[in-house]
Image (cartoon, rainbow, N blue to C red):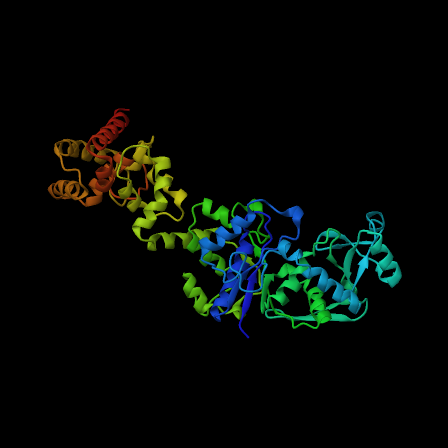
Length: 487
């Protein structure tokens, strides 16, 4: 049988990292075996619907390269692919009635007042009421009379109080739950819409989905899904429940973390390819220790049996490192196009921004890092003359002052301020003095940048700054060192 997977998000806002991982794994499982990857929009919870969320879903899938073979915009014969549109076809009520006829579901006419009197239990931190099967005891005539009178109802799943239910997960194996622990969940809500759980099962079956990937928080709901498959006499799909994604403190990754969604990460200067690569490794590992993968390479290597059951830690330090590797490997034109807006936020002067971008390309991990590397081009910062002292270069304030005073007239006489010409000029001075390059270049670089760390050497910086600004800054260095010597 051809593998068919689906990404079935609810349009409730930004795409969380966990949702993107689910989409990625569904995509990789299908493509690894030459199967189909489907997009289905699950919007049955109309109260949580967020305007524009579907656009976010489509945009994210397009940016990440997770191209769907079927979906709202690509009918593969299983449409509609939006659940609110499927409701209008009557498909969910049709299957709910089939379960009612089999005794696997029933109409429930209980009002809010009665439901408020039911016993409650705390399940996974939430207080839920346990339905007491009151309406299961209604006669056929009572049900028909209520329906004829237009009395509001829901349809509930009829789960026996005795026995157990077993389902198989590819990672966790067989999982058995006592039926007494399962509640008669609602299948059709009072507004006529199916619940997420019921629509999920009906759609997966009628769309021939073979593999279902979801977070392991859904393991507790899976016995109810399994009972629906068994009640219909349908073959259940292959279940793959993914490990929890936690922050560095091993707590569930939350929106407050600042990097819980794909959009957050893009805004923070991460590139799409690095994000996808990183997310692929949140719970899955290849046979070797390799960490950098293109999407095509992931398709080739991905084996879902290698997904871990242990929680995956969202390590922002590792993501920054990985992003840096992608920036280093990126062709310069693409890099410059992405880096230019960040450079222009810091540098307003008319300087050669391409040369500046080339300086930082291998030094940054994310684009916002650019500012701290290049801000000195816009304006010489206030700096401590202690920076002129460098043990390795064997420089101190006195030697640096002498070097700056010696090279100032030479640089004032120099017209060619290209990097090569400046370097050759200063090299002559180095040779005449019989010192090492650093002895001369360190004080000059300090004077023209005012920073301990710079993305380039003295002559490269001077080339970008130009003659007038370079001379001005060297004179400033001399002034600072002279003032300190006079004290």
